[in-house]
Image: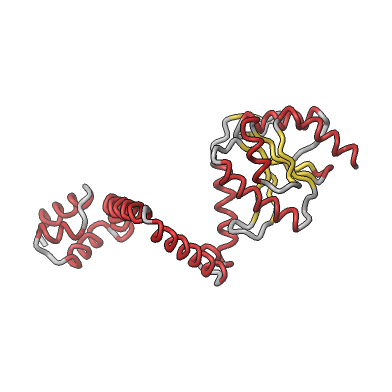
Length: 249
């Protein structure tokens, strides 16, 4: 092939043209365009550029699909059927231990999840020098140390879930106590997640005491949504609650 023509094809490909559009422009078969580009660029570089060029197209089709689903979801009958199918598909995948539930992938999911936690931005510093997410976590840590209570921050314990572990905000082994801290705006969603986590820890008898520390404006709603054995507190109530635990011991 003419070097100038090959150069033009390669240049346009690097600039964002797809192999299909290049085939149409230069009146060549798509397979020929692919073969020429792979030969000229090497398979690794070709694949990298190809994926980059396809991203805008995939994004556009994804957005179209999302808009179509949202429109259909306005029909309550469709919404119910859609939810049932999604739920059924999830249960089948989980029961068959396929996809993300495949046991072979468990160690990788755990590694990715831990790596994700490490990379998540923590801009505050706790009293022991550990990086923390929110000022509420820092306040809880300070109150624990004020009462000479040793805590483990973001302790990871084994769990029968997708990631293979739970990350617990604070664990005070002296009281067999787990303390979770949240500012989450979507209280119902967060309560559902916490209920699942705490219930599993409670049923497995890994811990016997559970506290959720949250803002005063959120506390009442969490109290209504969470099981009775989860003590929902605001920061100013934590010190006296911990004192009561020590008396019980």
